[in-house]
Every structure is written in structure tokens, then in C-alpha cells.
Image (cartoon, rainbow, N blue to C red):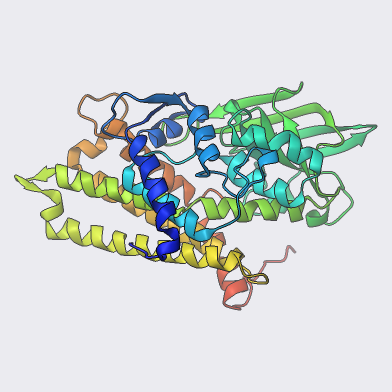
Length: 412
């Protein structure tokens, strides 16, 4: 998509383009989140030997205003105004150059905007900069063995004793827990209140006494998820976001940011460009795969959906500038459409590679370090994670289209 934003943005586009040219081929070292982060870094190609750590790259992007652009300087951001056109230009030029975006994650993408909206000044000062600069990695403590789609039925308990919360219970499907220093967690602190009103949003150090982490191997063959057990875990009483018993309100703010990040159209375009390159390089019966009508037709359908998602993202960015416009349902559409479409894209890559698409791990014939196979499995999981597609469809139909709520079976 080539958007002309007018001459007032030409200088900014040239500035971003020059930065991308200067850093084209940069290679990032370090590993924050396991294998998926390693694959995320492998986007760069044609390396000229430039290397820096993930944290160094992150800080460089922030200093230039290409990441955390509208987060105040006092909290470790760039301190600029929200300008949706400049954001689009940054993402477009980075995608075109094939250089890495800034590193996100649950702390940066979910918690930081929640704290900016609902946190205390002390919490903002203490937590936001360290998250943006990759000094502190966060995980999310939401789901429990008996509280998945019905998250409000969670049973992990928090009791206030003096100036400390004492926490007991269990969380499951906790992504990045084994790498994290902190967790933002939903805990039942008001057992006598209705389930949605008895929850608090607590910030828990992962090195606190009484926390046990058990990795769970998923279908990518990595331990991307974890079980986390709390036994008399004590944290300061001030480690609460929002008021006591109002954690459900805070959690829903976080969920909006989570769902919006799971179908990022700019990352989709970058992945689409890699798919096109793969289809030009792979051959079938002596011809490029991209020249075969069946595969080319599938590619064009994905390309059309990607452009539609990009346009939808621009609409949401515009709506953010207009007070009173509700974008929550639009963000749910991003999650629903984006994760299903990303799985469709990765599935095409697997088919394009033929028998090589079945390879995994350390095979000498594997393409792109196995990123296609890994992402194929990973995004199948994301159709479930962050709110299943079925749940998203129910919410969109009921709240957006005014359809009747699904009937609930009453127990005898």
C-alpha cells in the first residue's frame, strides 16, 4: 500500500528511510523470550556484519522516535505527540527495508498502556522505563485450570495482612513466565463479592518466596507456556493497579491492548514479503512456485486480506484521535481476523516448501531456520490464546451487531 500523506511528511519519510538504509542488515544478539524471539530477529537479511544487543537496538529506536514514540520521556519513551501518519510511515519504511521493529511483549504491549491510563505516578516511574528498555520482562497471570474462557471465575486468592498481600493459588498457560522478572496478575481479594467485583490487579515479583514455575511444552516443541504456583507469596500492599476489587476493569483495559497486538498488520506485511520471496525461490517441476496458478491464487487472496487488515488498522488509528469513538470491537476484529489470517499465511508457506515443510529443528535442508514451521504451530495456538475465535465472534455479534446473547443452561 503506497499512501501519499502530503509534502509535510516527505521530510520525515526521508529521515526514516535514511535511518533504515544506515542500519540495513543489522543483526541483534540476545534472547528475551525463547525461540520465538530468535525467529522474530531473523527477519534481517544481507547482513553487513553490524551487530548490537536487543536492548541497545531498542534504546536506539526510542532515542530516534521510532519506538515508544508518544510515551513521555520521564517514563523512558521518546516524548513525542501521537501522530498516526508518522507511525504508519515508520512501520512502512521498516517493513520495506527489512530491519527489525522494536521488541514488544506483554510488559510493553499490555502493561505499559494500562499503567499509563490507570497506574499511580510511583508505578509509572518504577515500571514503565525498565519495561521499555528491556530491563524487566513481564508475564501475565490470568488463566487458571478452571478459569479460561470464563476468566472471572478465577480462584487464586489474595489476603491483605498488614502492609502485604498474601497470595495462594495457581495460574496456567503463562507465556514467558520462566524468563520474567515480574507478573501482572488477577487475584480474588473480595471472596464475598460477585465474581466480577471481587478481583484485584496485582504486580508480583517472580523471585518472591513461594513461587514455583513449571514449564509446559507446547506443539512448537518449546516450553512456551508455564504453570505458576503461589504458596503464601507476600508482596507489598502498594503493588495494586486501580482500586481493590476493581481488577476486572483494569484487566479489560489490558485485554484491549493484548487483542490489538495479536494481529498487527505491519508485522503481517513483513511476513507476507518473506512469503513472496520464498515462493520466488522455491521450485516445483522446474518452475517457480509463484508462477503456479493455484499457489499464486492463494497468495493473492492472502495479500488482499493483508491490505484489508492494514486499512482497518488505519481506521482504528484515526478513531483513536476522535474522542467518544469506541474502538474495542474493532480491536477484537483485529485479533480474530489477524490471527486466523496469519495462520493461513504460514500454512501456505508450509505447502510451498512441499516435503521440506515437514522438517523441523536441526535438519540441514530446513528453510529460514525453521521459522515457517514454528510460526505455523504458534499461530494455530494464537487462534485460541488471548480469547478464542469463538469467544471473539460471540462478543462481536452481541455487542457490535446487537444479536441476542447465547443462552446459558441453568443447573437443576
